[in-house]
Length: 134
Image (cartoon, rainbow, N blue to C red):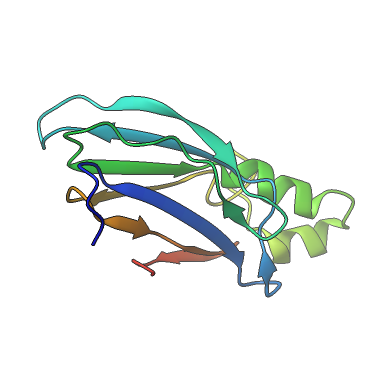
């Protein structure tokens, strides 16, 4: 456990449909200090070639809840561009309005002061999973 008065957050994304890191996915970070407090947008980053965000903004003191928002729509659109319609349909199921099935993934979790939270996203066109990593 850290001696810092604030929690810290990191994340990475693995595209399990291709068995590789998901690069260039925009990630936004928000925090709040209590269940009924409003969310404060803190900024964001994008995943690097290894699927990691190494420069997410620091959390303010008193943060109790964190939300990570992943822009999966742009990622999936970039990975289905140039494919024949049948291939694109197989790789990324289409929703009628947005073009992709999961246009974004929002993960909300509770944090405690001094703890580090690594929250990986396992992503594919048909679903996703998250967990508290190390």
